[in-house]
Picture 1 (cartoon, one colour):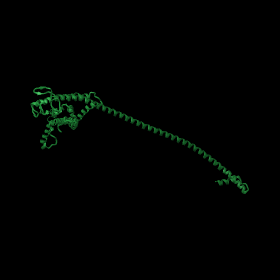
Picture 2 (picture 1 turned 180 degrees about the vertical axis):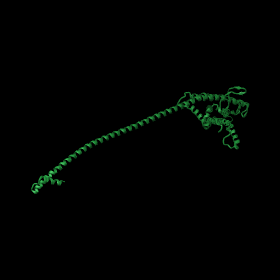
Picture 3 (picture 1 turned 180 degrees about the horizontal axis):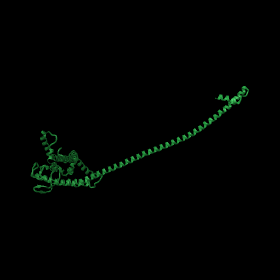
Picture 4 (picture 1 turned 90 degrees about the horizontal axis):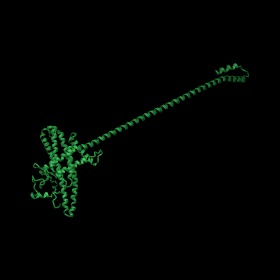
Length: 252
Length: 193
């Protein structure tokens, strides 16, 4: 182990487990796909099993499931009103998926699917796609009022509309990059500090003593990453709710 | 997160390519490309993301959310029901208290009335007794007065004879003669007026 240089990027490598190639595309079942599957399995199993007793007075696990459910429900209702509740399953799935993916990524040797921009971008594109498709089917061209805020002087309108359009277009980018960058940076930092521990302890007694510091840092960072895992799932869900609100009420 | 079992794959491309190339179009495992920015992995990740997330969404929508929502609804119904029940019981308790207080007030009124009645009766009785006693006393008083007046009359009547006797005695003593009875009586009468 010590012979190999500690590579903080290695944890993000995609390795095929079952190679599948269709029409020139590499659609292999990779470690990324494995952990997507694991995320879905863990989240589904938890939600399913914890609520299987349907207790009137919930136990601990059932409370967790109910809290997540009501947390997302209230978030969506606050942001998008009762009309927004038709998107509840969507937002709840997103929240649970991102949360469980982030949390699973904290386990050593586990792959963090949300540290890949294509995954977070896929989810963000799904959100924005839902907003655009629903907005146009519900409001027709009235959805474009989204870009024309009320009460803006006419001579400012071109500028404001331009800014609004840019901000709308940058939403999927910011939504995906935020989650991706947080997870990526957190895991690289964690890996670097853990690497210090390994490298230092290879230097003998003094090194072992000195490795206490990066070890403490790694422990603290793990706690921070746990917070970030929750926070980013929350932020992702909150922003999704706000964007869906735009689709429901484009007139500001 | 930590170094996994892929040392072989790291060393393999190092032999052919070296480590520093940010190449495009290399295989997914290629070294030198930052893995999240390697487009060769995108189709696979998107496909599996779509499959897994789609399944997850359906499972949550069809199975989990109706269940959790149902649990919460049942609980809320139960709580509302219990609150209603409690409110009804409280209403009943309030009604019982009101009824009790009303009964108490009625009983108090009745007690007052009875007391008043007894008081009145006692007063009336006392009054009647007083009246009879007064009447009896009046009667006795009348009788007594009648007796006194009759005694007085008798006495007055006798006063004449006594006066006549006394007068005749005085006359006899003073004059030494006897005055006639008729004269004396007339004199006494004129004095007595």
